Image (cartoon, rainbow, N blue to C red; front, side):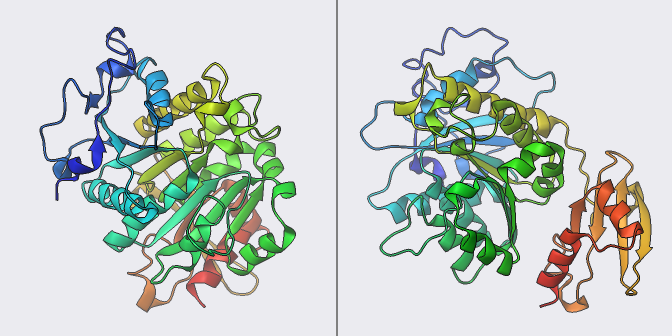
Length: 385
């Protein structure tokens, strides 16, 4: 199936990009533009990253167009990778049609080992990305950066307040682990945090993330899919968010940079940009910077994951007081850490990508002191229900 039929091309002339200099991102990206539309079958697209916007009703330029205009003007990286901009997915007659189109596009890209980088106004459109993994039958981990946890009863249809309900509850379910970072307690009822704990999902308050931003690296390194909501950023840095508190712009970009560095991650989406609330395009510029940092992180990928080749890792075995043996791996390339979680033999093939979980040196030290690392215990309980 040629996914080209799902897209509107990018009007680079109306965006004012044609005069950009040769050292800008615009000059290195292959763009499905009105002047030079793609002739190839997009089902066979060859690239490292594909920018995928999602259309909006009754607007000449979408939020995705405004962001890409800022992104095109940024300078190129020292190391070149192949990036394509496929344009904007057409809005369907119904919400489900749009989700389905996104799923078809993203599943096609994933099967071609191309990372979808999604730009969409509403965060419920992350469902389209998630449905792509359902289509290809891949069990995944999701990392969500958002000030709220959008888990509510679906009464009529999926929207931006309840889309996580679909992700958590749809059957058959392909979600192994869900991590929510930077939530703010005055937006989230305590009972919902308790429920997340019961489902053995991970939640981290904004303060915990800001106190030690480096601790988000192993969390995001464990993810296949990232949802980055603009509303997680404070309004002083991103006026579109209208959130007086939140991540600083540099913190948001740092976390997205970690996502780019992760060999496991295969898709990312930036959601929640509303141009009508933006001032001087500051939010669009910040999101474009985050995109640039994601690509910068991608350039630093090391093909670094222990289940592929354990020869390039130091191996440490820690025998706990309760006779549990935890095996830690430290990469000789990047010095990053993983720990192996006990998994029944009959499930090891199914959960090959999930019983080796990213961790930190602090987790290793905790185990050496006789304490089970919390993330090891969480994963163990999931694998040994």
